[in-house]
Length: 295
Length: 216
Picture 1: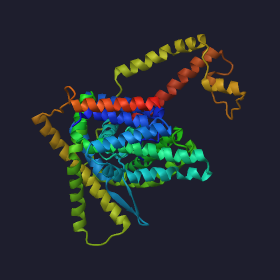
Picture 2 (picture 1 turned 120 degrees about the vertical axis):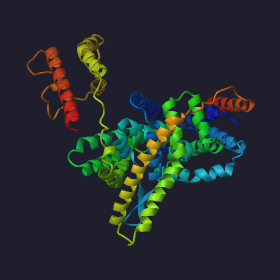
Picture 3 (picture 1 turned 90 degrees about the horizontal axis):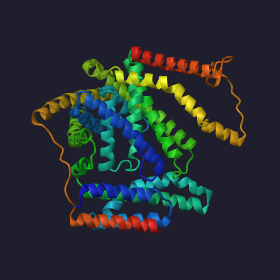
Picture 4 (picture 1 turned 60 degrees about the horizontal axis):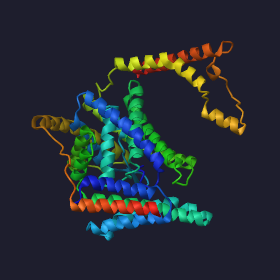
C-alpha cells in the first residue's frame, strides 16, 4: 500500500502533506499536553515494524503481512497510535525506501491517520457489544478504508493514467479481501491482551472536550447568520450549481428531504434556513453526545 | 561527509524535479544527475541499480497494459513513468546508502522538526532490531513446545496468542525504558554549524542541476 515517488501529482502530494502535518501536529500537541510517554510510542512503533515482517500463511501456498494501524489505535489511543504508525512509515521510507519521499504525506495519511482513526473509532463504537467483533471490524475496515484512500490519491493523479474508478476498485476490492486477515490478526491480539492484561486496553478513553472547544462551536453557531448575510452580499453561490447552470443541467431530486435546500416549506426562506441550521447542529451534537456516551 | 541536512533537502529536491514533469529531457537530466551522485558518493552505480531494479520493474508492469493501445504516446508514457520512478528510487537510495539514520534524525532536528517527534523516531529506530529479536524469541519458544504439525487454524490461533504476548512484553519493556530515560535524561543532538567545502560543492551541483532542468 506504500505509494512510491512518481505515482502522485505534486499537487495531490502537497495537499496530503498539509493534511497529514495538521493531524500529526495535532496529535503531537495532544500528547504533549497529556503525560507524553515517548518510550511507549517509540517501542510500540518498533514492535509494529517487527510484526509487519511476519508473513502469515494462507491456504493455497501464499501469505500476507499485517499492517497494524487499527491495533496501534486500540492499544495506544488514536493520537499516540497515529504517531506510532507515522514513525513506522518514516523509518520505512528513509531506511528501506519503502514508499516515496514526495508520497510520504499520502502514505502517512492512509496508514497512520485513516487506518488508525477509523480502526479506533469502530472499535470504540462496537467494543461494548463484543470485543472480538469490534477488533475484527476495526482491523478489516481500517485497512480497507486506507486502501480506498490510496486508490483515490493515485486515481486522482494525472501522472497515473488509470482512472479513479479503476484505482479505487482495484485497491478497495483486494484490500477488502486481504483486510479479513488484518481483522483476524487484530482480533487475536486484542482478545489475548483483553484476557491477560485487560488494564492495557482500559482507561484509554479520550478526555472530554475542553471549554475552548465548546466556546469555539458556540461562536461559530452565533456567527453563522453573519456569514450567510455576507455570502449574499458578495453574490456567492455553490460552485457545482454554477457549473450546472453553465452546462444547462437541471436538478431532478429523487427525494426532496424534510428540509429541502435548507428551507422549511411554507416559511420565509431566511427563517427556514436558520431553523434548518439549528436542526442540523442539534442532530450532529446529538449523535456526538450519543457516541461519547454509548460508544 | 556531506551535511545530512543538505543531503535530505537535496534528495527531496531531486525527487520533486523528477516527478513534476513528463518531459523526457528533464527526467533524463535528473536521472543522469542521480547516477553521477551515486558514482561520486563511492556507493557505485551497480549497487544502487541492484537495489532499485525490482521496484522499477514492478512499476513498469503496473502501467504496461496501457501499451496495448499501440499508440506512441502511451508507449512513451509507460517509459517515462518508469524512468521517473527509477530516478526517484536512485535519489533516495543514494541518501540511504551514504547517510547513517542517526545523521538523518539529527538533521531533522537541525531542520526544526518537533523535538518529541524526532526523539521518538530515534528511539523507534534503535529498538527495531531488539523488538524483532524479541518477537523471534516468542515465536521460537512457542514452536519448540509444539508437538503436532497443526492445521492452518491452529497456526493462526497460536500465532495470534504469540503476538498478544509479544505486545504485552512490548508494553512492559516500554515502561522500563521510560523510567530509565527519566532517570538518565535523554537528548537528541541537532546538526548545527557552518557548511564545509564539500557541502558547498554539493549545493552548487544541486543549483546547477535545477537551473539546467529549468532551462531545458
